[in-house]
Image (cartoon, rainbow, N blue to C red; front, side, top):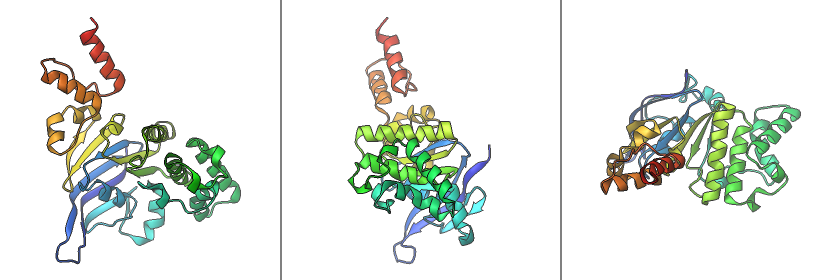
Length: 281
């Protein structure tokens, strides 16, 4: 399957003109297939958010290249098409809300695409229904909860019909119920709408249902594989300052006490089945 995102020796430094520039990314090579659900993990300062912002040309490389559907992000003439292809949802939804009425906020992107009023109306309604916020279409966004605001931010991107959506820690400000809702929406967009998803997070359990996981540390990719392949490496993740999903942690601790349980039972159902087979004989 063709790559929708690709980087070639991507390097990025903050404060590049100062006496003490900080390297955030160091020669990162990455490719993301069209339709893939990719999760990028890492502790604070690992470079994962800096990497994400290159996919939407919010940041531009200091060295190397980033391509979105073959388009070079450093080409200013392609910026419009790049952001139509790859939308971005940020950590704080308040940073993306620009209108005083929910449906007007969702319509902002499509309006800037020069679409007809009929098409804009259709896209706004479809997007709000997709995220379960249609009944709030005439509400003021600032009166909504954090989870509802994040749904509106996602709807605003969906309405632009991008082929890829990058979400930079979209659940970090939400309660458990809000996190679950956003993750369900993300999964639906990928599985049922065919949208490529790149989710940036430091919550391990959010990666369980991904197609592929990349772990960042000190501006470099240090691990890559399926969720099962990544999360069985408990010691290595711990050495990077990362935990594992609670399911894996439970099985790992039991193994430390003398059991021999498979650590790749990473989902809740898999973990329950593993424990039942061991203790309910």
